[in-house]
Length: 98
Image (cartoon, rainbow, N blue to C red; front, side):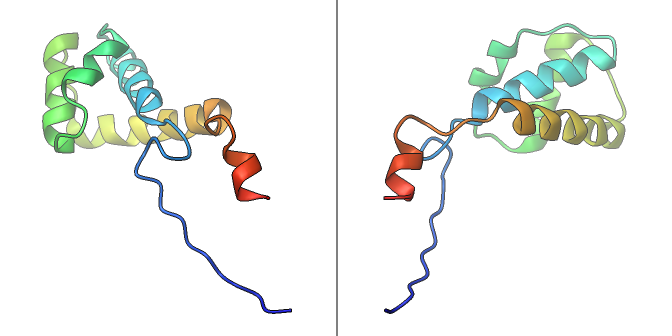
């Protein structure tokens, strides 16, 4: 029997919906630096360059953190959220393992 290799690329939304979790991680990271911002703010900058996204969050949260420090904390929080809250979209597991 032949073995085949397949590669599947997820452009966010195909297999999982992780964008909302990125917004949550951004909001939580802002709170670590003393700011409060609604996670829904992410919808207004989703898809833009990272610098623009974080700058917008800083403005909305009224914070001025060190960019590198913010990114380091964001990465930790984002990974934790992804590990605990990321789930496949309905029927994805069935489709992949048919």
